[in-house]
Image 1: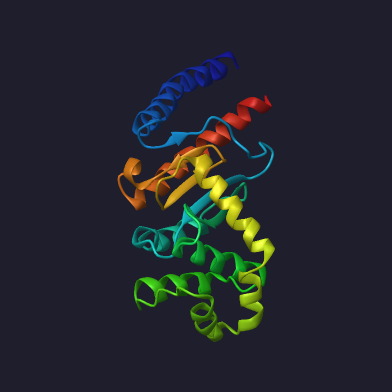
Image 2: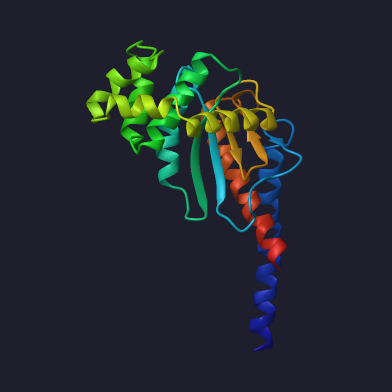
Length: 221
């Protein structure tokens, strides 16, 4: 019995340094202030699923390039991670705001399917229809059975206006100057320049999700 216990202790002593070296390698691979930024505070409940928020613009080619990687990545997320999208708006009365209103209006009337979201990107980025006005958008959305008048009413609604103000506040709080960006757990910001590529943003997001999970487990002990 003593020999078996001693053998287990010996095996554990061999595995522990290896596990620590893997963690050290990961920590060395992604550095705060280089590959991602940490905000001064988080607005996310530590008991809620870890949120990964994508800040995007339909008119952004880099966001468009990120989309297929995001589609595959989100399929593999565990149940303790929640992925959400939010359009970015930096200034009022711009096409950025128009496209954000498109997103929020469609979301509010239940018409924002994954298919419609992807096709809006295709319409703007590939077919070069910029969808500048509510009328342009309503015409495009007919193929999805969206009522044009209902959509335009939502587009101009107070609820969508509040969403625009909220996303502008978040853009400032996250310290963003462009898109795409990923915000993990409400406190880590990943951008293409630090990540090196849009694809690598998701690798860093995986690392930060694991980091947040580890910190939560330690805090619960």
